Amino acid sequence: MKNNKLEPKKDCIKNAMEIIGSKWTALILRDLYLGPKGFCALQESVGGVNPRTLSVRLRNLEENGIVKSKHFKQVPPKSEYTLTSKGLDLIPIIKKMSEWGAKY
Image 1: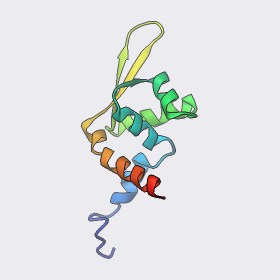
Image 2: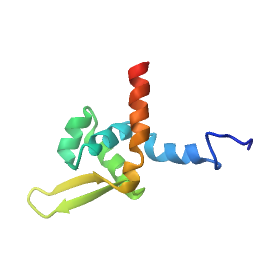
Image 3: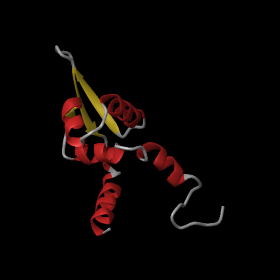
């Protein structure tokens, strides 16, 4: 691969997109940046996301160390989601996406 200043190591961008490139993921990160959210609150704030899709996205983010969940033993069951330090490292990217979206 030719030396590329945007990608210091092979497949960096591909690897990042496998984690954050799915539909709804950037909006989930945006909303979790504001603080911990329960599943229903997150579904409402993201807007229009199917519960199954949200569940899959959260599970993927959790498996990749971007989000952590806390489960409460109550009826009905409750879960709360927060960004990890690894997830917080993605916020400058989300902010740049926001700036680009506002500009164009």
